[in-house]
Amino acid sequence: MARLSAVAGYIYQSATAIVLIFAISHLLGAADYTSFSLALASSQLLCVLMFEWLQLAGLRFLAAADGHEAARLRWSLLCAGLLSALALVLIGACASKLSRLSPDIVALGLSVAMLQGFADLYFLTIRLCDRLGLASCLLALRASAVLGGAVAGAAFWGTAEATLIGIASGQAAGLAAGLVTHRARLARPPLSILLRDWSEFCRYGLLAAGASVIHLSVPVLLRFIIVSRLGATGASAGFSIALDLLQRPFGVLNAAIHTISYPEVVQDFERGGASRPADSARRMFEFMVCTTVVLLGGLIGFIPDAAHLLLAQDSLDGFLATAPMVALFYFLHLHLQSTVALVPHLEKLAIRLVVVATTQLILVAAASALAAAAGLSPRGAVASASAATVIVIVLALGPTVQYRAVPRAILIVQALAAAMLIGSLASMPIQPLWLAAKIVIAGLAAAIVAWRGDFLMLARHSKP
Image (cartoon, rainbow, N blue to C red; front, side, top):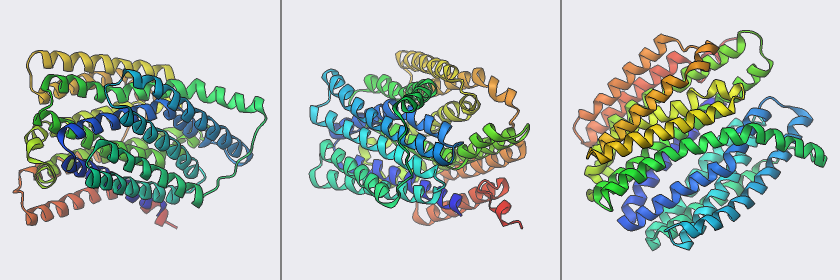
């Protein structure tokens, strides 16, 4: 049941992220939304830059530790998190000199990045204390607080600054709830041991996080290339909303799968026998591929309904024109960043991760820039970026193929069939009764795929 509650919590978090984007796009004017969107995207990039290396190191080292070693690693991890928060403030203050955004927006974006990064790190330590259910509840609580704060700021004051204050308040509330509800056992090590832990975190975590930062830079760069061509228009706002909106479901689902499955994969890799690590990785691959394929179909199938119900008219056409292709791009981007990278993470091939990420950045930038220069539509530019990502995926599959953790073909076929069925629902009329029917059909198709794959291992746990 802990896995089921975790998935439900992450689905709720994804839903609140989608509602937040739609709500803020309605409540803010085009100029304020553009500033808010750029500040939020930049804060996410800074958060990854300063905290992702600790997230990755914590998952890789803490997942296989127990007892006193785990308590020591938690102390080392949280101390490193505090230093990263301080460095974020200093680096952000210097970088703000080069930004076109106002100093207030820059300061608020830094606050959001700092609070989110440290809260994510603390929630990770809770998850790795075998408190998956509590960690999921805290993530859902934080998502609610962020949504409420952002909507309140945008509704009452109608500015990007007020909206960012609301988001920062929600992040702070989530962190406070985590500190109150769980106190993980800590063990303060000698300075030499602390420095040794930090050195191990850095050797693996910094390079792996560098790859994550480069991957996160890809959609940011794609945004700047296309928006600079379109200018401040309704089409530009619609494209920006598509980038903001459709990244979140994939990101949240990926985080849910890693939170649920990755610690087990690491434990089997470190302690398992000859076949157990490959079996564990295969189950995780099946989980990731099948659920994201169904998610892609669901996004395509429900894009028209969501857009007509929630988007402002001036950005509607730009959103509808680009959203399906943006969803496909994020699907490919996720699997390059996570699925293809799983085995290199297990084997600590961090340099390979950086090379793959850099290759994607270069190819996507070149392809989208050439498409924009040739006069292609934003949809064509995103299609070019997707094609470039497919090329990188094919080139980077070597370690995964050698690991022989091949997903079962029947599950992939079933997921593809479900995704095509759900995606075809986009052609149905945009009316409340039809929408209800679409939700029922999509829910049944997704449930069948989840049951056939036993992704939550409910059948396994029900056996005597």
